[in-house]
Image (cartoon, rainbow, N blue to C red; front, side):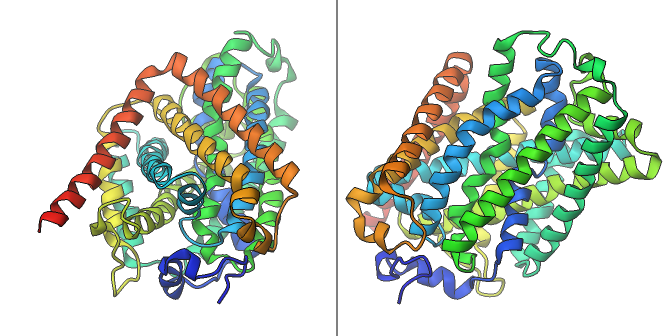
Length: 449
């Protein structure tokens, strides 16, 4: 039997078949686009512009455009991975097979780290917008409660999650379009001058951080096993979704700067404050509720997607096998979901800022992209059988060009972050080393038993 993208189940070691028996291909183009937009935009557009706009000044939209360049290369690489390996855990499988099992283990632990760091960032945004309605709500406790709540929901097995998420995304996309168009129509163009009051250096630094705003594109290889006709749906979803995402980012960034003085920014609730000036009372509150829901669905989405990574990696022996179990009643990896939530709440207790979480995430993401770029570069020559069977494939020369571009951009951003945030690299290295050490210890103990 062959997957719809052309990869045989035997090649997947039986794991893909096991997962797909429990998670049928049920996501069409519309659902995939909505899920992609929710993952990529999600809460980040409600959280980051206020914090980073205070650093760049009115030229924040330029930083979004710069960050979109490597994201475009990433889109091509992700599309090829998702269609060549159209099953859950695609990132681990392609890196493990085309580079080495050791590299596959590294990418698995890095994806876990990204999830553990993404959830506190998103949950803090959730808590910040809760405080928009309840100013005395404790920030950390509210964020931790949000993580626990959405972990519990995921453990129950949410069959209608895609439909609910699609409806919420449609609402917040329409509201964001209204915010962007309304802000540009009613705002002051004079507030866009000078465009870069602090110069290019802060703008380039913020561009690195803003790459986090595009990082959700990496979710597609992890969800490819649930998408109908992935060879058609995934490339189309990327084209439609990525185009919509860039439009939203530019509109919101420009509208925000034309509505509020950039010197007055600095908090993650800046969008809600600007909306209060653009819309009458009900509209402003609706946008704040929309931001709240976007942050919540993003936390839920991270748990949903990355728990599948944990499940596949555990079944492959890269993570402790304890996490490789699916709950027979809810048909979800409860152990993986619970562990990710606990680690995220522990990271939340570190007291790091939103920018620190984002910078560390982007650092880890750069390493992930370098590994994915190397794997895709090798795909046509190392596994020509899989490459030829994929119903969607880019010509080898173009594919290698995009892979090299992604690697070079990722290396440049990685170097930039290492020079300015060496502590983030240390945390990442310690996390991956400890994780792989735990797995080695488990295997040693299992051999002795």
